[in-house]
Length: 111
Image (cartoon, rainbow, N blue to C red; front, side):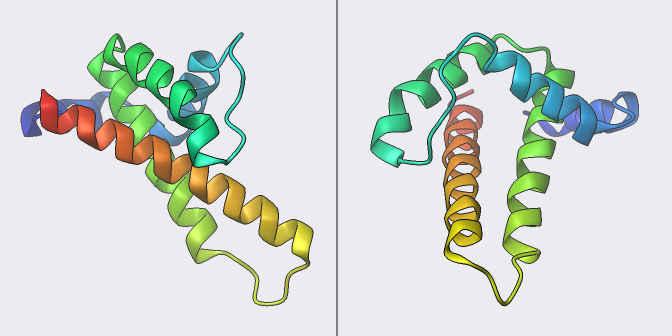
């Protein structure tokens, strides 16, 4: 997304976190959700990117903003003392968000 569109999106999208999560849910509506295994999720991420290409720049901005927020939130707020189940949940969603962010970054460089 070019700088001008980002500036406009920052002005027009009042709550990019909320809107981004809604866009995420919409893109995976009726689709099989990612499971956190990079190889198994590759076809799902490719479908996700194809759908993301069709988004308005405002929705695309909100989606990338939310993905960055969700990933950073998991990375920064990992409790020191966790059980194996919590650690698995954390690792799964970090993997999912990171994989999707990387795919969208590749899409941005191709535009």
